[in-house]
Length: 412
Image 1: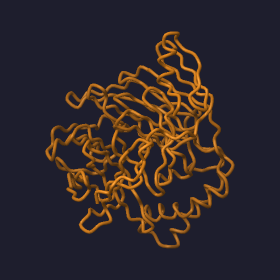
Image 2: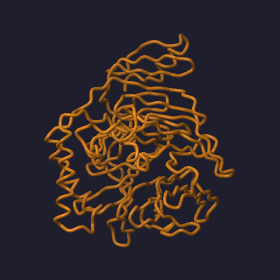
Image 3: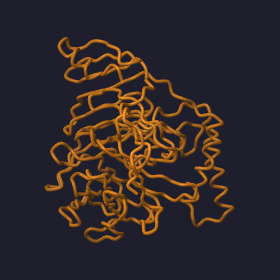
């Protein structure tokens, strides 16, 4: 980019606000009662100053002797390029070495110390440490190396998920989209019902609710129980701060661990609408998803379920879709907004729009087809590739400056 918003912000700080141009969109930065407000007059399709290297550093999952992943739900990078993955179907945590050639099962299915039931959050806060939150067992476990450093029960926080780690080491929690959304879809007044943000101290087991946020939209009257293109309120953690988005509005809000709002970024955006062509493009992926969810039903019943689901998509044709998919934060505090795809099929979420921790619209990053990003650091990008046989492999790319994109040598 030829003009950087950080430079603009510095120039404006002395006068308390103003307007400027960052490449192709007008931007205004101001202070409102201690809250930094960054407002863009549109949305930009500029390329980010970094990108995935042309070739991956390593792949794991499709080679002889590799771990056979069934369905990966979470993954985190270590500083050296190694990774820890959670396999949802096997309920195992798998650690890969820095070149992806070997693996080790860190935790297996069970209820005892060091075992897991259903992982709903995973983090790698140190060079060899892993923090795992387990919804089924109602606890959080911190592994140091291959040993348990600490464990704490989370029974009092039913309906909350661990969104990340705060600046002082406390866990930052938020109402879970997956746990509570179904119960909020009917029988309440107003368009939105609030979710909650909370802090949890693993040493004292103290749980404090510190803020609320807009959570789940009402289902349109033409749909019975499921909205295939619903917008959601989502909370993540970036650089030890809460970050909140709502996918029906172009806005990102940062909060301190005590709930104080520190920054809001807004931009102008026009939503796309669901079309018949998009519905047709969803069917193959929806068939695969339905097959995985209903493995034991008869073929006739499977086709009935699939027909009902696709009928719900058809009933939504013409409606505005969310502006982006489920966001995530990387190791540098940047917020990544995936492109929205009907049905939330994450393997086709490219390009990703990236916003810095200071509210700078960094631009877009392209990912290879079929590649779902799980985690990003200053050096690496971790993701999952699903092939035509639905086999999942873990893939790690180098994150390179766009000026140095010539192919990186593969380490495997």
